[in-house]
Each structure stands twice: as C-alpha cells, then as structure tokens.
Image (cartoon, rainbow, N blue to C red; front, side, top):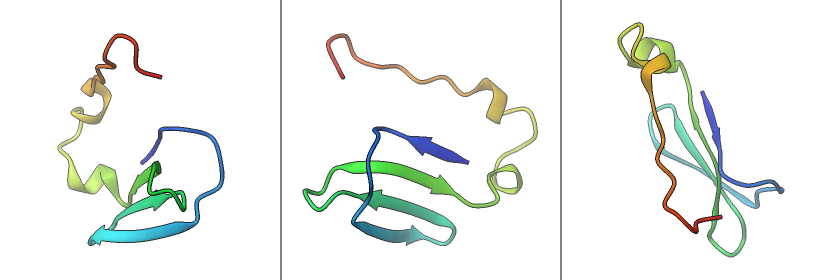
Length: 59
C-alpha cells in the first residue's frame, strides 16, 4: 500500500518499523508512506473501509 501526500522526489527513505517505509524531502516533509504486505497486516475487508479526513483549509 502506498499513501502519497504530495508530488516530488524524496531525499530520505527510512524504514520506521518492519515493512513500513516513510519517504521524506530534505526539508523533512513526508512525501509517501509505503506499507509492505498491507493485505497480510490487516483483516480482509478492512482496507476498503479506510477513510481519510482532511481538515478544512489543508492543502
């Protein structure tokens, strides 16, 4: 599973937990989060039910 927050190239890639990788810009902003084998980490059906709330005014 890839969760992309913004376009651009990352400068730093860190594995923060086994199979969870966060890509950062050199300014420290998160570009993307990758979760390896997400379907094995979550019960079937729960991935399709994920919702994301974005605060008003956020870009």
